[in-house]
Image (cartoon, rainbow, N blue to C red; front, side, top):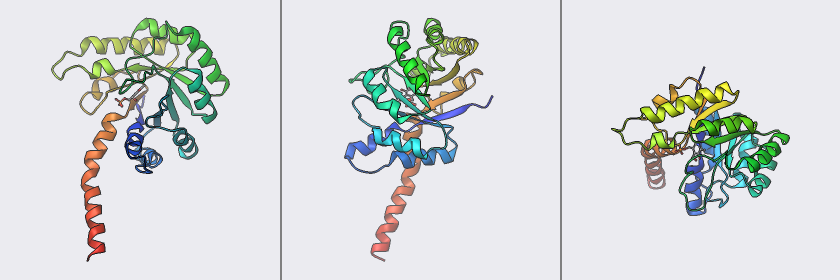
Length: 242
Ligand code: PXP
């Protein structure tokens, strides 16, 4: 099976918000990612709106040819904002104001009552639901019971292992969870903290259909695009004063 790549462009919006300016434009970034081969675009519409705004989601939905996946909290406020924007997918994630990025998966067992309501609400709006879960079998079973369409396995613990650490325990959890998710009839995605160095072992898990990657791609784009950006500015200066 072909492994799909979902590209998370939140950091482009973070850079824009840092200046309260119009650039860099996340919609342009999404279109570039799409033409470079991204199979989907992901954005996280956080409660504090620190990076992605409703306007971004609305425009992405309008211009993208690939599926749009919106991450958000499983709260009535988030549903009221996201449902009218009609993304292809909603990925429910835990969210707290203090965190720099999503910390750990949802506790679907603890939150089952609330999740059941939210998943039904999304389904009746024609939106498919993915749950961001730690690779724990009880959590996966709950996702199936709640009739989610997919599970995104949290690779954060695996990604945080030191370079010389032994990944076999965490990889075993990811493999077992991926197998169980498929057996229960749900799609399997994975993501968090994946980069060029650590992606291979997760990409090799046969049941995983799609990886969601943001930080490492946007971080690398800043570096490999810098030479060209400086050269363009030098050329603009040269044109002004030939
Ligand atoms: N999946 C989920 C649910 C996330 O919250 C994030 C981070 O926004 C990612 C994947 C991508 O993680 P990273 O930016 O570390 O690649």
